[in-house]
Image (cartoon, rainbow, N blue to C red):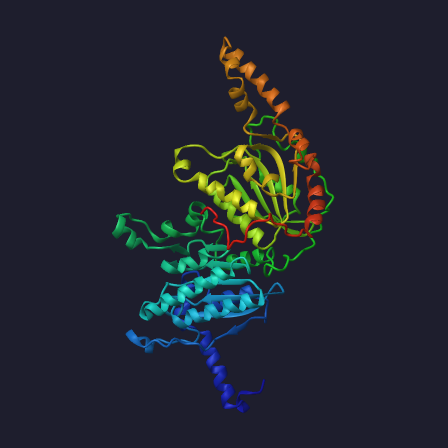
Length: 526
């Protein structure tokens, strides 16, 4: 680079304009952003990308609105930074809203930049990362702002299942702005500095008379634990960026490529005798399915998704001999691992994501049934539970299921059973596979005999005996194995080496669909 004294005027002007563009809404606005504990759009991108790899696009775009003083409010970039570069050596497109200019509000040209970047990501087959920090639609631009949102939503939908889409909410996201993240694959929220809601606290108070602040209405903790809108919570912008990088390491660039394999140094043939006794002898006692997950898959590779939502189900990514897999499991430690409305949605959505990108699905089943009661029935447990069935039945990615203990009734069928298309199903020897638990079955089958018992103690002893008879004759893995419904009964300690072998066999699986009449698409219960 030449000295300033002999630089051509055109080049000097370009350098000046670039420096101006990098300031966004100006130094004072940047100071306000920092005072809130937030980084600027460019600072976030600097953390996301490998050093020196980010290429910015459309830096000099400005809006063309003139009404309501807009002709005096202009900044290069129009409140959003777009571009591409390398994240841990892999190409990623990004869209980072710049709150320092008009609160990151979305207008015509702001949206045009976003859509253009999304089209680039779709055309070259790479993930797109959104760093959201916006006050919403730019009111001064009227219907042009609404058009912009519509076009962004359209691209979100058409990118779905083709390229991974990740949204990090790093500031406000209200009104129509929340629907673009909601259409993406994963949402990360920053605690205390981000929120999402359709209508804000003032409107809520005016319409329904309820007083609530923006964080209790739509903050990170609320959406991570209650609504299920957020998949991850970060303590600050830096941690949010690290979560994005970690998530990307488990994802393929597009639906035609496998996720990146990584050497983990964990012996694929490693057995674990601890697992032989992890399931309590008393079928009513819980145990921690996450401990099973951490012992079966490559050490320190389990990356849980939706950790704080519907804790009776566990979903996340892991590696098995370096290969990326999706893990779906019941959690006996919480509500006995029974399925409810929220767990059904959580499982179904994750299974569909895995299948869209052909990531192998490994299910660890210990499910006593669907949670009963008026709340669940009146709020549609039938409809929600059907989502799991639909997701598994539709899936063509490699599917392996391990039945660790309970596998009762419709919940057994739903959780990746052979009958919904699982490629390989194994059971531990303590597995109970039946319409219902042995005790409940005995109470129905031998109702008269139990009613004839002379004392409560006699009835209890008879029930125990009959339940054991039912378990020996019906509710055990060998009956299912004799029908070919499960492929093997294995010692728990041998789960890891078997899964590695089966997985590596199924990696070349070809898609085989049941012959059906041509159709546009099915009608999944939603």
